[in-house]
Image (cartoon, rainbow, N blue to C red; front, side):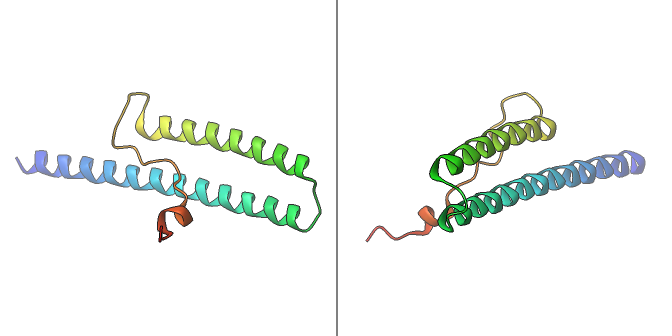
Length: 100
């Protein structure tokens, strides 16, 4: 009985750590995405790149980010539909703004 309990506890801890590391990787991906977007915005504001160049870079970044995020989610959660997946990035500024 003790061996079964130890084994199940070890298994639960393993799943917990795997889930936490997956979430950490997704947060790291989101952070690098946001930083890159800010860099492109700064380059555009400073006149280093044109609007067309900015749009091309952002489109490419969005495509790469979406593909990488989907790949990471498949690795973490598998291919089945799971309602417990974290939501995609939410615009933090829009969510905290007052409507009044």
